[in-house]
Image 1 (cartoon, rainbow, N blue to C red):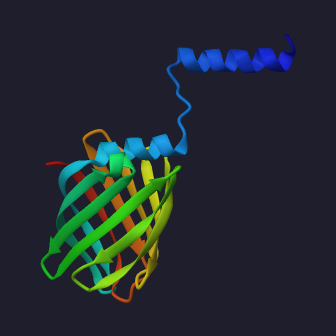
Image 2 (tube, rainbow, N blue to C red):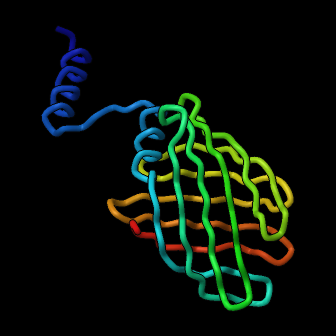
Amino acid sequence: MSGLKVFFTTLMTFALLCGLQFASPEALAADVFKQLDGSWKGSGTVRLQGGNERISCRGYYNMKAGGAVLSIAIRCAAPSYRIEMRSSVTNNNGRLSGSWEERTFNAEGAISGSVSGSSINLTISGVIKGNMSISTGGSSHQVNLSASGPKFKGMSLSMSRG
């Protein structure tokens, strides 16, 4: 057996013994969608042009189309600010695409992105442009959104099952 073949055989054996799996991007996205499926609650901070405010939120994630689509609804309230964001994300061979809307301000646009490990990373386009990440970790997840809107600059949330 050639040295290169021995190296790869040894590497694959080591990976199997350690329980490592080589998952496709599509399988990674389906796994993250499954981890998010359900109801969540949490709190965080909304970043506005005039400063930051604490917010409390409810999140609803619903897998559809056999796990290929994830519907997201996040509702947040602060003393002077409300956010009602909805999106639909489709997993097509590990590439994510879809649409979003923010109902309080009647804004909408498109999203695209990918999954990396246990995180969904999205680019937002439309009236508001920016980036959004959703990072899962057991019974909790983090949502971070940075935006270039005229008043809305972003938000950071910590969510748990509920």
